Length: 157
Image (cartoon, rainbow, N blue to C red; front, top):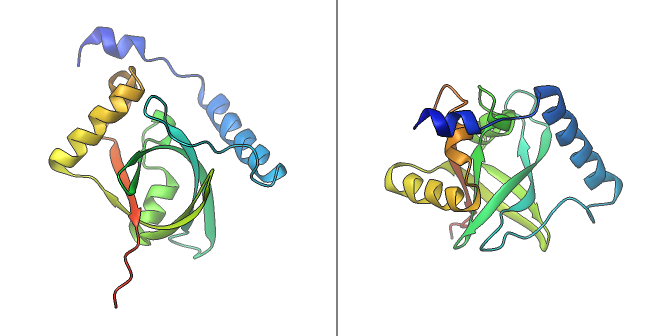
């Protein structure tokens, strides 16, 4: 990672990021889900609503995240707005991997896991294609950003 890439990555103040998240969730709720989600395309990430089970409370918790499709899987990042620390939804998903996502075309039941090794490298490269500043933003965090795979739940018979 070069200093040039790191210097290019500039984020708005944390209060602004949190306000944007809150506003987005409010618009989604206020419009009954008609605004706030979009399908991923080959040249643009989509937006989905992930609903997890709280690791301490057991209550449902929802968040809107960016994603792209990778076959039957949805791929997102546990980035916490590029701030340090893991986002609560990722901690919840690690404790309770089964969850649900709302997409522009409906709801799916998923099981979450972290990508590892060459799979992570491949998916990170795909994110880099969608966001040219990805490595610079990632450099703002003190640790590695998990790439999260939300795969379909396969029922055992």
